[in-house]
Structure formats: structure tokens, C-alpha cells
Image (cartoon, rainbow over all chains, first blue to last red; front, side, top):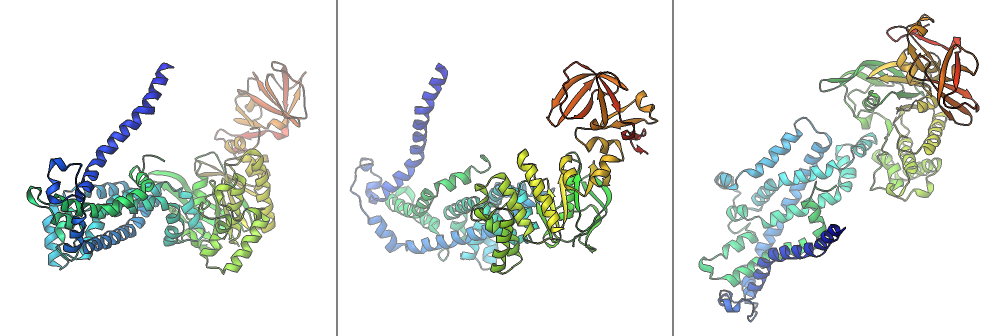
Length: 277
Length: 334
């Protein structure tokens, strides 16, 4: 009896404290970044101004006036949204086929897809750059959208496959008996039933696309450059422009943090897929 | 019309042959029941007719049209699933009208047919609910409604009543039988419950391990089971089947006698035994008799209520003309 009471005491107070501790630990860099973005570059490196300083909007005004923040933001929106749509367009039929008409090799194909995520991106960097330049797509939206879609397809197919697996096969078969063709099965039955899962997948893919830096920084210069490129462009040695860099970073991650905040439920569901039925 | 012919149809999953080649004809308007223990291949056979399972070999024809390679949606059959398989995101109205919408039927005609189907199935008050808000019985009706609106050439039922409670099952059994009487459409019904098979079918197909053991009317199977398996499977309580010297007296390797074809006496008879459990159903009494020296237990069925107690000595006399005789291979001897 005493043991039960003790363990419930731990779970009542211990767990929230731990959760808040971990949460604050993760949140601190973001908090610091936002705080720094309101400091002048000079204040940003002075320890005495760590918490107390005179806030300024200079960095933000500077950013929109001098670096054309909105162009980078527009490119980020265009590439992330298009890549998400394209990824779903390919992964929904793929996951549908594997979930409802599996063959002996379905598991192998899924594993192979996942294995592409294990390939170091650096290994294909130069081939990709030469290829992109060779066919004249370097620094274009098309290239960024294609690359973002390709790197997110495996995770999208895996997630959707797991969600689709939970739909009873009988319902799809009932659809077949009711005279539905394959496209009808996807449109009339699969998408409405797996809506939550598809939304989680779309959200996650969108966030990955938005945050992607390795490829977007290296495959663009100006025309298709995204917010990642803007941040990278403000990087300076010796921490000279911490205030400016923080403002740019805050403005780059801001939209996605807000989006993530509103879609918390879907995100958690998406990240724990398969773990809970 | 709905005449279904299976010609040398077989099915293997990998190296395992679940249905060796078989032939079967279901005439237009027949109510055929596939019955057998679980795993006998009856559902697989039904799914092959539906087109949901590919054939390993052989061919299937519906109304003389070879449909072996035709997808399920184009075979003109309707199916009712054990799990009901309703579309959870659609209302009852949308569920029932779904196959018609897929046929691109005008909305007015769809509404008319859905209303008519709902009326005949007592679903009118539930048309705007979702399946999740219905009871099991109502869901089953929606599934049937979705099948009948299409006016299919045949209905396929895959154990449709096994998720319902006993009382509802009896009611739905009657409704489906009445539906068949009214519509005269071919129906193929899969069940493991021999009572459903006996009460509903005009043709029963008994399957075991993918092999058809016997095809016949319910009373054919009851009166003239072709082999020991059918004899034991059809009838409730089960037929008493035993081999040995007592069977040889009747010139057979194995004999069977149904519980209702054994006379009981407390004073004299052919066989003697001791009463184990007596089950009093009111209209009938089932007496399970031990220590007869024939089989582990002999069950007899007596009309009405009789008072026997555990441990009583009891005499049994089989009705000679009702004894079923089988040879060493288990086949019927006339």
C-alpha cells in the first residue's frame, strides 16, 4: 500500500517537474535567440546585457530593408508547399498499393526506401550540383521542389503506409464490390478515412521542407534561395552580427513555430505513429 | 439472372493448396449455403466468386460469361461482409446510395431507391446517422441495404450474422430468407453454423479442407449423408457415430444414429448405459448417456420433458430404419 502511495506521489510531482525541466531546456535556445534578436549587435556579445538591455527593432527593420526578407520567405513558401503537395501526390498511391495489395517484396521495398535516408547527403552533393547545372536547373524552384520531395518521400510513404494499414481491408473490398475503381477507392474511401494521418504526414513533410538547409543552401544562389539561405548568408566569423543573425533566424523559424503550435495534436500523432493504435 | 458456374477452380497460397480443383454450379435463384468448419476454404471460395481473390487455376462464369479475369466491380455481384464493412465517414443514406453513385445514376433515382430500401429494412429513421451511431443489427441492415439497391445478379454473404447476438441472429436469418423468397435472386451464403445452413438453404455445399464433401438439399444431407464427416456435421445435437462389433452387426464398419432416432426405456432395450447429464429444454430433453461400451458418449433426444437423474440406468433402442451405415473409408452404404 505504502509503495503504491509513494509511486503515485512521484508520478504526481516528479513527472511534471521533469517534463517542465526538459521542456525549458529545449526551449532555452529559442528563447535566447528571440531575446538576442532585439539587441544591437554590440549588446549581443556583452555578458552584462544578457538579460537586461534596451530592446531595439533595428535588426528587423534592417532585415526587411536590406536583405529582402520577403523574397526569401516567398521562396520558402513556394518550395515547401509545392514539395509537400508533390510528395503526397506520389506517396499516397504508393502507400495505398503497399498497404492493400502487398506482394512478397513489399517489406523489402519499404526497407530500401528507408535505407536511402541512411545515405550521407554529402556523398551525392557533387553529382547533384553537376547534374543540376548540366540540365540548367541550378537555382530554380523546380530543382528545390524536386530535391525536397525526393528526400521526404521515404518518411511520407512509411507514415502513410502505417496509417493505411489501420483501415480495415473489408472496407476497401466493399468499395471494390460497390463498383469503385482504384482512383475512386483512394478518393472516396481512403483519403476521407485516413484524413488525420494524411494531415499529420503533410504537416511533418512541410516542416522538414521548410527547415531543410543542406540542399537549399547548396543548390541555390539568389532566385530560388529560401530562408535557410538567408540565415546562412548572415553567418559571420567571430560572432560579429549576433543580433542581426538572431533576427533573421527568428523570422525564419517564426512561421513554422506558430504552425506547429496550432497543430500540436496532429504532430504528436504523426511522430508517434505506429506506437499507439 | 444469376447462374454461377465454377469449373476446375483451385486456389493455392504459396505452396499450400487450400482448394484443390472443384466444380460447382449454382442455378439462378438458388439459395446456396457453403458450410464447413473454420479453415475449410468456404470464405476463400466465396471471395473467388466475388473477384476479391485470384484463381490459381480454372474459370468462373456468371450467366455464361467468363468472368475469371473481370474485376469485382464489374461482376454485377453484391457482397455483405462479416464486419459489415460500412463506410464510417458516410451517413446511412450515403452508404446505401454509394454503389448507385458509383454507377453515375441520377440523384433523384438514387434517393428513390435508397428510401425504398430503407423502408423495407426499417432504417428510415436512421438515414442521417453515421454507422458508429447504430447497433450491430442496424449496421447489418445497412450492409444489406447497400447490397439490394444495386439489384445485383447475385448476393454473396460472408458469415453475415456471426457478429450478432443469438436472438438477433435468428431474426435476421428469417429476414434474409424472406428477402430471398421475395426477390428470387441467387444468393450464396457462407457460414460455419449448420443451423443457419439447414434453415436457409435450398442447396447446401458441405466443405472440408477445400474439398466438397456433399451437395444437396438440407433434408438430403440430413437423411442421406454421403460420408461420416457430413453425418457428424449436419444435425443438432450431433449424430452418434461409432465403429466396432456393434457396427459390424449391422454389416458396416461404422454406423451412425441421430439422437432423435433412439428410443429410450428405463426397463429394457438394445443398449444399456448410465445417464450423465440431462439437458431439459422444455420442449425436448437431451440425455447424454455414458458407459454404453459403444462410444464415449451417446446423446439421445426425447420430445417433451422426462425425469431422469444423473446415474440412472437407461436402455436405448435405435430405430433400425434410421441407422446410417458407412464402410471403412467412411462412405455411405445403402
